[in-house]
Image (tube, rainbow, N blue to C red):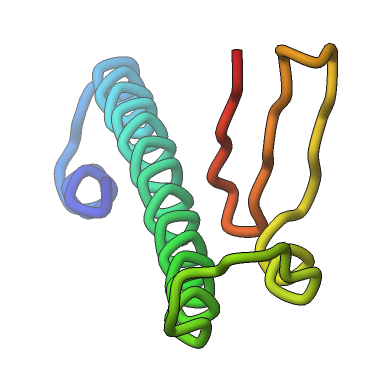
Length: 103
């Protein structure tokens, strides 16, 4: 876009043609910028999810041995929410965003 502006300032151009080219470039820029912004958001989301998974793994590693009974501290550090629709339809939502559905 800067090249088109510079060219218009130093060369006599048909203004209608210039405006059409400029509008095309601006539209292309906005489309690419929008895609870039979406990808940047996805990257940041993945980074945040990675950190949550690291915390999840660290909490599990602290336990060391296999659990033989319910550990309320571990449960509350890992599980964000449990949605019970029926005795056969339960959704576990972990703090790292991971979901497990039973059926």
